[in-house]
Image (tube, rainbow, N blue to C red; front, side):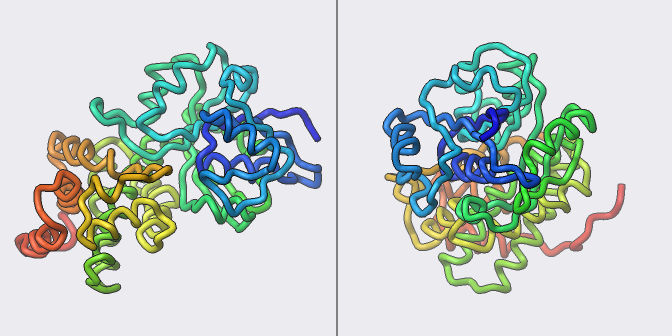
Amino acid sequence: MSTPQVGVIGAGAWGTALAQALAGPRDGDEGTEVLLWAREEALAAQINREHRNSLYLPDAALSPAIRATSELAELAALPVLLVVVPAQFLASVIARLPAGSRDLVLCAKGIEAGTGRLMADVATGVAQAERLAVLSGPTFAHEVAAGLPTAVTLACGGGPEQWARLSPLLARPALRPYYSDDVTGAEIGGAVKNVLAIACGVVEGLNLGQNARAALIARGYAEMLRFGLARGARAETLSGLCGLGDLVLTCSSTSSRNFSLGLALGKGLSAAEALSGKSSVAEGAATAPVLAELARREGVQMPIVEAVARLLRGEAPAATVVSDLLARPLRAEQEPAA
């Protein structure tokens, strides 16, 4: 087994699945040891002892090439770190890393509550010397852990040079990265789709049918595109894996935590009830209010995002929120080009 070059910070479902994928064979070799940081000491011990993560990814038999630790400093010397902690904890975790020159690949999808910062801005503010990239795309953790084919966007702030350094380390037969240098677009796609997935779950919970869900996905994508363009993202990025691809996946299955949250809201639960007792995080719950506020500041119309924010704040039941959306003034589907 080769010396580890990659560490994964965060042993939730997605972090564990990425560690599992990266520990697998590459180009005929026997695999690479991957260091996986778990916040819980007991979880790190279980991963090392039993090769399983009963808390976040219970059905996966983990590779012996994954070595877990609860000591973040153990990962500090590695040249590449995938940061897979929830968006609202990204700053505090990165701040604990010893200083160094390394590639940080940000895998959280969200917007920081209170500041409105995307994850790359959060990381830059905490660790200015790090080289940043963003990995995003349509990825259910249990499928990645099982070795099913997955394609993702790897948006490199360092451009082609960083891509040439990272892509051979991260690519596997069943994990195919595609290059982009549009970090903003990759981040906005991942953050907005979480909120739209909540809305699609609400549609399911209210039994409004497949037509309504398809319409919501299409109109939600229009909101994602408007907001992204206003923030400097490129349209082709948002039409790719990290935008439209991720949106279609998470708006169509209860395997999505955000869709499941919306499903519970549609069935009449309050946000507090739907979120209580969950070990995993539905990122869209924290993103929706701040995204709605940012859209208002930018003068970008995002009625679906605003509706989800209202629902999470408990301002109206799901049926009323949907009724208000349907009662919006009639208009052209496509806005005139500027």
